[in-house]
Image 1 (cartoon, rainbow, N blue to C red):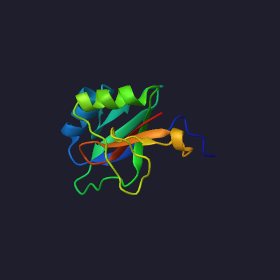
Image 2 (cartoon, rainbow, N blue to C red; image 1 turned 180 degrees about the horizontal axis):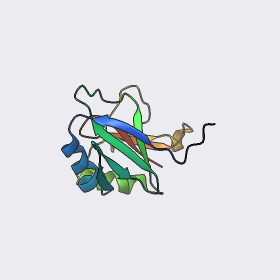
Image 3 (cartoon, helix red, strand yellow; image 1 turned 90 degrees about the vertical axis):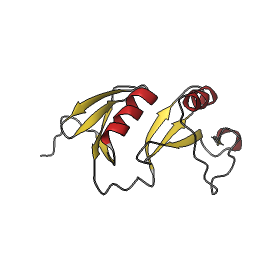
Image 4 (cartoon, rainbow, N blue to C red; image 1 turned 90 degrees about the horizontal axis):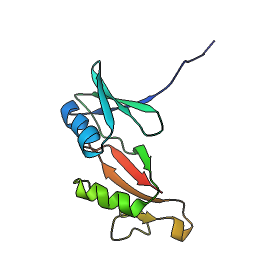
Length: 126
């Protein structure tokens, strides 16, 4: 019988030290070394594991979404930490901050995408 006691997600990076620095110092998350990789402790109690991979290919989809109450303040804070939002030409309603304003256009949440040092896609979302 399949009866897991817990579950978590994982993703690869090309430079473990840079990823640890980004997730801990830049984003302010707790990161613990674990085996060959590291575990990020996410807001709300979940975790995600990342590990080095020599032939790493960045995810072409969003691997982590960070939900916030105030996307404008969150984007400004990220920018102050050196994190800049990606701009995708095929996504409509993107403002000067780089946020896709979905709520104002009945297209879902307001969301902005950014990259970790391994070029995996992350988002801030309201």
